[in-house]
Length: 319
Image 1: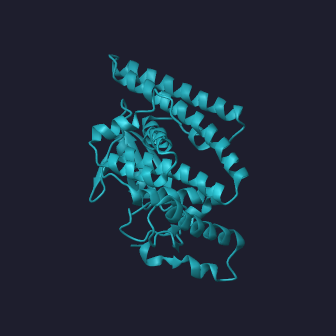
Image 2: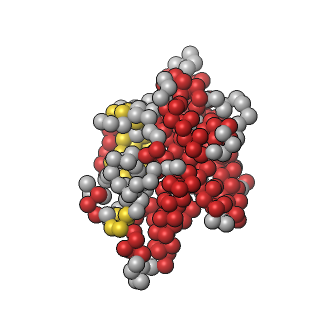
Image 3: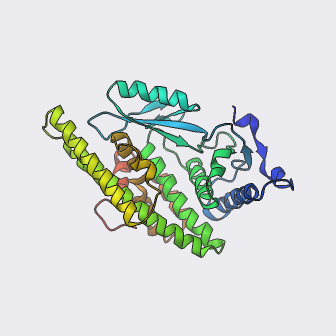
């Protein structure tokens, strides 16, 4: 309700000559990508992301992710309408951190992650939030596409399927928007950044698979704890070497903290199925309408069928 009652119409804001140039550019970007998403990609055409809410905090909320000490499967929390999700959101950072401490005291691996945007899945006209405007225009455009994708398709209780779909739509949609706007150089730069990020994600997912195998093994807890610590230390070293090799600081937040099961579960939620969705889009020769219809059909299948689809690109040549 806090967000919905403070919305300001973006068109009216843009009509004010006193609007700072950087803010103007970003709000214009929002409206442009918003229209592109509906007209060219077939994403929902509604009143979402046509208003702005100024918040007195750097993020709209903070998500708590948790996993058992010897498991890479995240804990779930259940809600009305959306089913069980692999995160718990708090509108105040202190509340999120208290929740994380309680979970850690119970032996869970925990991570608190700041979030700039979220979707009510089309039930309300979701606004742009001021934390979203902290992103550069391309990152901002990606956020709008991601959240609109959630309005297009969201499977209650299946966080992994829903987030993989939204992430894949964000990436493909962003490429098309940049191309349509003649921003080829920006698209090439984004492709290079994604390649580096993909290498980092591959390290995390490899560690997740290794730890899953470790946790399923016959070790006693003390030996398993030591082996876990050794594998996560190796992951941190590999990540630091990758960052040095590419001369990038984009992974500093990850590398500044000790990796744990919650980190690996979070990355897997968003990344493990994105290649399967990219392959599905390629199967329909890039036709977004047919792709969205196919994704909707998949969303109505059993949980086992959706899981098999998300895992279909682990050992095959996919985009």
